Structures are given as C-alpha cells and as structure tokens.
Image (cartoon, rainbow, N blue to C red; front, top):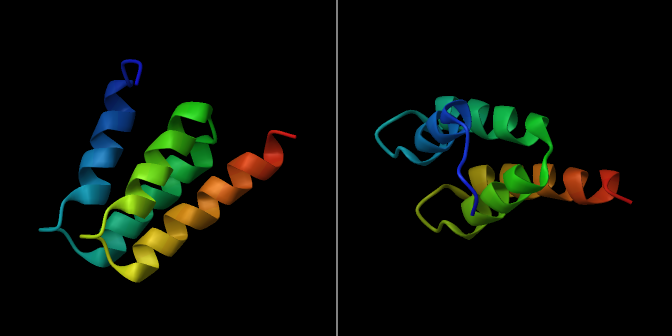
Length: 73
C-alpha cells in the first residue's frame, strides 16, 4: 500500500486499538469511511477481515466499503 497520510495512519491506529472503547473505534471507522478513497477502501476491507474487532465494527467497515464501491461506478 502506498504511504498513508499521518492522519489516516492515526485513524487506523485508533480503529484497531483494542484498549479503546468500541464507541471510539467506531467513530474512527466512520471517519475513515467518510474519506472515501481507494486507499480507504482497502483499509476498510482490512478492518472487515480483522477478527479481533467486534461484529458491529466489522459490519460498519463493510458498510462504508460498500458505499465507496457504489460511488465509483
């Protein structure tokens, strides 16, 4: 993956930090999804595949990934 901007790296770190609350991680996933680029699509799919995240977080990442795919048509 190409080099990610620092802000995106920080959001990914928050989204995957199991020491943080689910609510805070979900907010980070929402922010990543709102960026809506190809790079964020790949990040969101990585989050979907992360079995350490809750089912809800993974579904949220999948929802945002789907929106990016639909918008690219």
